[in-house]
Length: 143
Image (cartoon, rainbow, N blue to C red; front, side, top):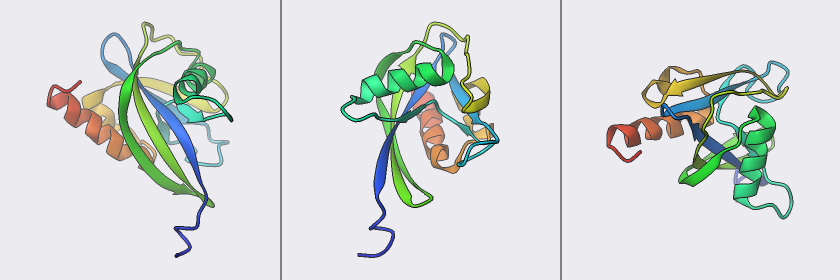
């Protein structure tokens, strides 16, 4: 077993939140953040012990944005190494009826972006492939 395989892992749930105009919500990590400061990401976070994916994602999105969301379906997964662990990300498609965001102190900006323009956003590396697959899904009529 090599050193990379021995890294502990954690699970993070992320929401690809779409508004009524089919724009996607991204948040910019605050400059005080230990990881990915100044980079853009999708809202979400870690599960609490005993918490379901759905409940964790609804809680995290509300904490970070003030939004109430409706979860639609799983969309994608990704993995990255951060500091001394690996993080597995589960991305869920979600929708909201409003674009009024109230940020927590974890983020310092937000924007609603057309899916086909996500590649222009300075997303954290681990989210770039998901953004590309989102654009492909829209182009192919899957979303």
